[in-house]
Structures are given as C-alpha cells and as structure tokens.
Figure (cartoon, rainbow, N blue to C red):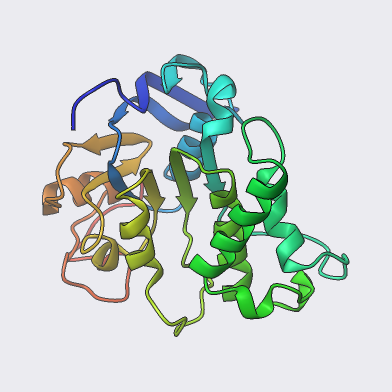
Length: 251
C-alpha cells in the first residue's frame, strides 16, 4: 500500500541514562500494515511503542505519526500496555472502564460513545461480564477489556504490547484472528515473544534488539533473528521465544 506513512522514524536513538535502548532506528509503517515486532527482553520493544505514543522523547532522530508529532497524533492511536497494575478493589465496572477509552481528544461523544462501547464489548466477547467489577475479572478478561478500551475511540493505529500474555487459553476465538480482522481496517503493531504464532498472522516482521532489523517482509530468516537475539536460534522451536543452538557469548 502506498501513500504517506502512518509512522516514520528516522535515525531514532534513546537511552535510559547510560544504557542504550534504541540505536539509530529507521522504521516506517504504511496504512493497513500489520507488523509483528519480536526481540529479547530489554531489547527496546516497549520503548519503541512509547516513543510512537509520545510518552518518551527521542535523544536524537525524528518521529512522525500521521505526519504530525506523536503528541499531536495521540488521539488517533490506541495502546494496549503489557501489564495493568491497579487497585483491584477500585469500584469500577467493565463497561465503565471501556467507556473511558472514549474520553479525550477525538473520542466519540454521547450516543455514539455508548454505541462504540457496546461494539467493543461484543467484539471482545465481554458482553456477559459488562456489569462485573473490573477487579473480579480473570487475567484474560482484563486484557480483553484493555483491548476493548483501546478500540472505543476508533483509532487509526493500534499498538499492542504482548496482548496475549495473560489471555485465557480458550476465549471462543483467537485474539490473533481478531487482530487480523482489525488489520483490515486499521494499522496494527504487535509486540510479542511468540515468534511461531505471530509469523502465521502478521503481514511483516521486525526484529529489535536496540538495533532494528526490518525489511518490510514476512520472511523471517535465521540471520535476522540471530542478529536480534545475538545467538543462533531454531525457528521451528514451538512454545519458546528462541532455542539456542551451540555456544554463544552474553551480550
């Protein structure tokens, strides 16, 4: 798909103190892309998402989202964080928590917001628990609530950080299949450790370990993964982020 990029990073670097998180990353997304980002822990994946959101500012380089600064574009971006830490005794129901996604700049108002909440509840299979206190949800139900909340405002770009990390093993239909459906409507960026699964669903794959390895392709070569993880890997290892083959040093 051609046209102005949805996201454009040019030579973006960021460090936490003296510890580099990203080094001169070039990364571009077009409308309708469904990109999976893989890489080891502390490789910069979550940092990349926070930079696109404008929650962090790069030390060098430039970022544009829909041709604007990340802060200017924030109303068009949905975000699902990896973990949700909150007071589980807080008295808020699932429906109300999802409705919070409509607040702020660009979100639906009035009757349109109510309809958007109902659609999100249905799409994420949460209608039956809509009036339940959010603290009583299972981990999987909570994660689906966060996805529903991100969808309420009708984002054009959806960023997800390990969205299936705590999902129920049986939720009626695969979240990955849901994300494939969403990718027909909006641009989706999915951070995951599950190489085997995401490679069957995403359109393209990027490997990130401070440096970015991205060729706008779904092909995941051993060389790309070895460059990201810093050791030889077995791409057919199921249920594991990667399997070490032979001796290798620590980074």
